Amino acid sequence: MTLTIPFDNSYARLPNSFYARQAPVPVRAPQLIAFNSDLAAILRVSPGEVQDMAEAFAGNTLPEGAEPIAQLYSGHQFGNYNPQLGDGRAVLLGETVGTDGVRRDIQLKGSGPTPFSRQGDGRAWLGPVLREYVVSEAMHALGIPTTRALAAVETGEIVLREGPMPGAVLTRVARSHLRVGTFQVFAARGQLDSLRRLTEYAIERHYPQADGPMGLLRAVVQVQSELIAAWMSVGFIHGVMNTDNCSIAGETIDYGPCAFMDSYHPNTVYSSIDRMGRYAYSNQPDIAVWNLAQLATALIQQMEDKDAAVEEATEIIHAMPDLLQQNWLARFRAKIGLATEEDGDQQVISDLLARMAQGQADFTNTFRALGSDAARDQFADPQAFDAWSEGWHSRLEREDDPTATMSAANPAFIPRNHRVEQMIQAAVQGDYALFQRLNDVLSRPYEDQPEAVDLTHPPSEAEVVHATFCGT
Ligand code: AMP
Ligand code: MG
Image (cartoon, rainbow, N blue to C red; front, side):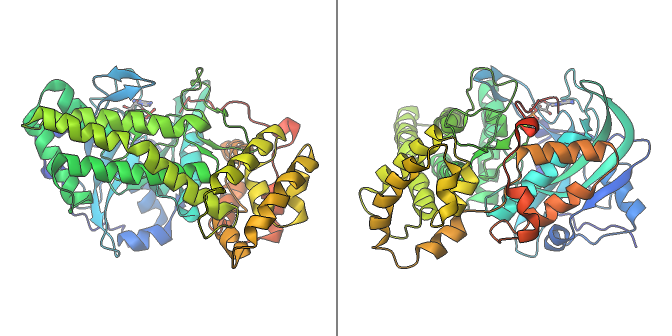
């Protein structure tokens, strides 16, 4: 049996200037580490022999119908415009239309140099590949829009990072790889025909009801507002919210130095390259607005009536903070058991968060434990929680079933950063037990799983990961 993927490619039909045709560069000795059969079924991908899949997901063989391309884009990195980025270590094999009717990209990441590699080697090492596999699948199970992981292979080659590391390739699946940066590159170059073609493509693929470029902007503002509020609600810190990592489809994309918070503090940063804290937890909503303002700027270039376009785009972007706030409030209301809306709710939530920051309370465990005695034990000063809890309980009297609301909004399991690091260290030694276990437990994050209680524990002093390195 050979691996078959029912490709139906659309991006490769767009003008040549949108990408470079680039085959993956073969590797020495591919070995299959993981294959996501649930996702494969949705994609109508039928698995083949293990070695067959290892070769295909390493890029050594091309499944029939694949048309590998490296996509062009640019973007703002940490606020500075980089006029050309592009897939420097990834190729889009093609697209499939799933059993759910959704068109998705199938991309190999770590598949060798491309015309956009600049100084890079075009490769990925095992650590970030497994991190993205576990965290993106966990995100999906949490119900948050994200790219997904179809497969991972070890290449049998060494990649040089901080030291020699085992090489790997991730097969990533996305509703598309269109980014804010995909629009920026054509706008910055004044290639208005390409910008118009791209805008039409994005509307047709993702938002068929959207009315022109400003309709597209509105739609992306909407989905990004929902996405960032969802991140905030689970304590997720993306780490590199550059405009090239901001998806037009509204998915979480590019899991680099990302992490879920353990103890709550709004200024938390994990990425070692984010020295100024630009992408700190509580900055994420503001950065999303900034990124969408860049999309607005790019989209406007193609409009006939610039003044009217600027006015409309300004109105859309100015409305985004409110939209983010509404989505945030909806998420956090549910987290404290509120299905109804009252004026004072925001204050109740903010008060809890302030006390959590003060008391170094674990973000996930505090919310999961709300309503039981275990919640107060999360606080350095449990009486600070008690004081809040009194007011909260009187608010809960006007709710029907707060427990049900909370258990659907507060996961027991998130991919804790120290566990992800332990998983990577074991895998580098050839031990994939923790990788398997994390995937299994994290696929049911809202279920109590007593046998996995160790995975709910925050790190011990010795286990704390202080910075997630970007050497991806
Ligand atoms: P990222 O930080 O993963 O979003 O990547 C930013 C840009 O750097 C993208 O254009 C990537 O394709 C490129 N890049 C990252 N790592 C490598 C690498 N090892 N080789 C070539 N290009 C890379
Ligand atoms: Mg990127």
